[in-house]
Amino acid sequence: MTVNNLADAISYYESMSAGRVVWDEGIAFARARGLVYAEMWCRGERLLALYHGGSWDELEREADLVSRWVEEHGGGQLEVFAHVYQANVQVHRGSLASAAGHVTALLPRARESGDPQVLFRVLRPLRWSPLPKGTGAGRTSTSPSSSGSPGRGR
Image (tube, rainbow, N blue to C red; front, side, top):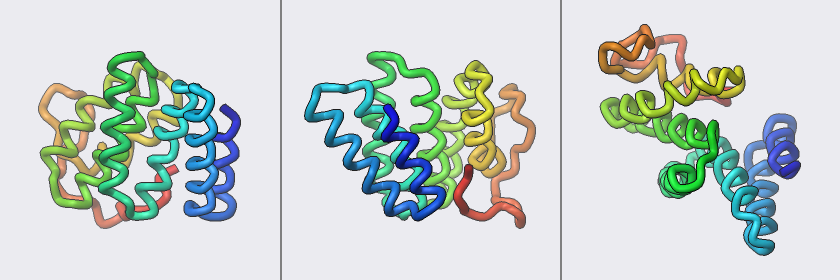
């Protein structure tokens, strides 16, 4: 749905809050017309604005909703988006074990996608989260690096 691209561009060139408004409108538009797939993609993409806007409780509820929908219907990289932003929130809240669980869940999907946009989103929580041995992910530090700071992540 093109509203995702529009909201993303507005978020990047204007502000996250302005982009969120467009995502909210896209969700309402899709829901009113029974376009569940489009609605879920808007919800998944809107996680970016929820994260950067500090609406982390809402982000966790929305990401759970998106994840459940993906489990039932499929959705490929949409599942990665849900786990990425949940992992980021958990890192900032100091719940590194929970963040690692999200990273472990998203890493195989991100690799399978082969999509640079998806792989790039995984980097931030990956570098901050402890991972179980055997994930092949490399870094296992339990604290953010001095160079890592919350930011746009894109």
